[in-house]
Length: 126
Image 1 (spheres, rainbow, N blue to C red):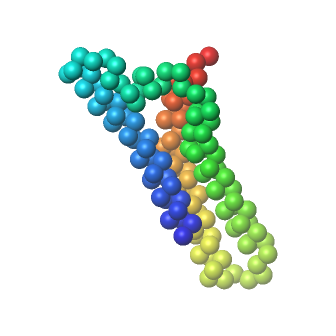
Image 2: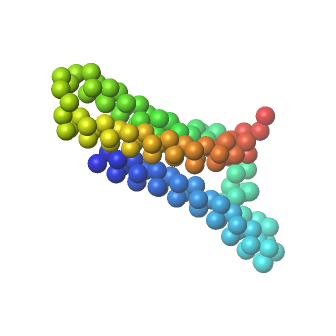
Image 3: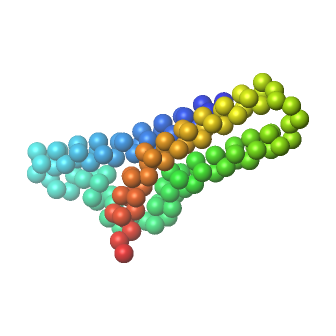
């Protein structure tokens, strides 16, 4: 169940992130055809005067939640290994699930890291 929830969470976050690129291209094409430069609701106009609290919320969902989720599972698997006297099928299954969670989260960060960095460069000008 934990792996399923993590996979659905990551799929939803990556789906939303992918939609921004699609909307930006679509808005650019519509603006060029209609010669209406203010049609860019989700790109240029949306990002101007972007509230800092929304950057924090985005950072929370894209970065802190997966780290928190993996940390909780790391502590749980560590305690299982420390307080179990013998190797059991449950412990082996839990360990494999933890490894899957860790690998999925690791690849998620490879995918989202460049997008998060680009987002912060655009929104937080020095």
